[in-house]
Image 1 (tube, rainbow, N blue to C red):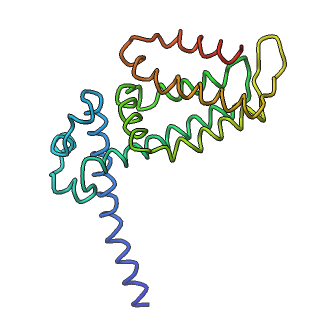
Image 2 (cartoon, rainbow, N blue to C red):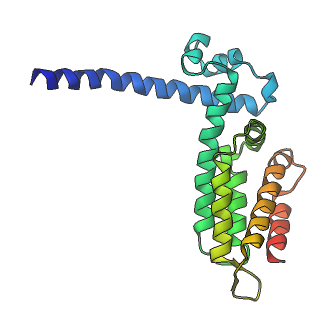
Length: 204
């Protein structure tokens, strides 16, 4: 009985500490995203992140040994969240020509609560660091969806795609989205026109 009580007390002591740790990490992540909205990654320092997050530099180093570890952890988390949104878009039945592609576009451009510039910088950093662990399986799933579910095309029933066609279409859409995020954020690429062009690519 005594042992059980001691265990429960130990768990009770750890829980608030774990919650505080999660909150501090969230503050660090939020500060990093805000800085990414204004600066290139090379211009951001751990001191700037800690200052904006309202934590000491020592506290930041308790969770992240250097700047790159902050970016890697944030990229992994945000890309996973983005992947989940894209998967949800892919799994929706095609109610109109290009509906799923349009939903994927919305999922990508609306990531980070509309912070497209931060998204582009973090995504590019992740890719430069070889961080495709999250995106690789996502591309495979997207291609498999096109292959098994096909595409709804104007005036036609759902058209099946071969494995090669699905592969090419998936990478084409992914490449366009990766390049477009920053241009949309800077106002150099109208979002509505981008969606229309992607739908034409899919339909033809």
